[in-house]
Figure 1 (tube, rainbow, N blue to C red):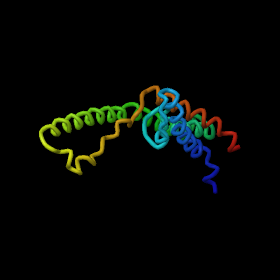
Figure 2 (tube, rainbow, N blue to C red):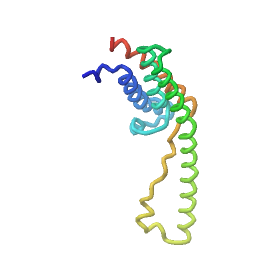
Figure 3 (tube, rainbow, N blue to C red):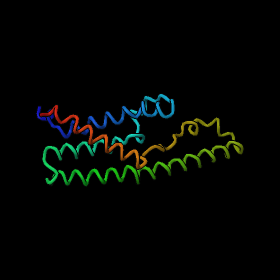
Figure 4 (cartoon, rainbow, N blue to C red):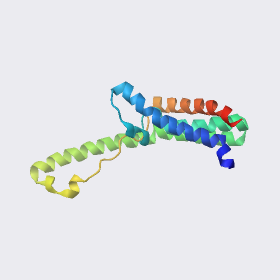
Length: 158
């Protein structure tokens, strides 16, 4: 039962859930598109990765102090995760977009040369996921979300 009183764990999990769910109304406000599937996808505003690691780090800082070794570990873990979310994963998403365009161009080219539309396996091809990473602003607001969630949940664990 001690697991249920683990404040850093619950702060991180709550930050993930909040960041994923809040993507739906943010997308709706900005684009007038209702996409409930955003709650289960990667990318978007705010970054749930950033929210999770900053909530975890903030909760550890609250409990253990910002001079503790475990806080230092969590802080570096957070920086690496947020850097990866806005760098490597974002670049992979951009490469996926280019590859998807190349595949579509190839499809149009081969359509005119052969009757590939009748081939079932070609119709079943899957596009690469393009929304993998985050814009730096999405990482920033994800991090801010995590810090706020940790401070809001802390009184519940006292």
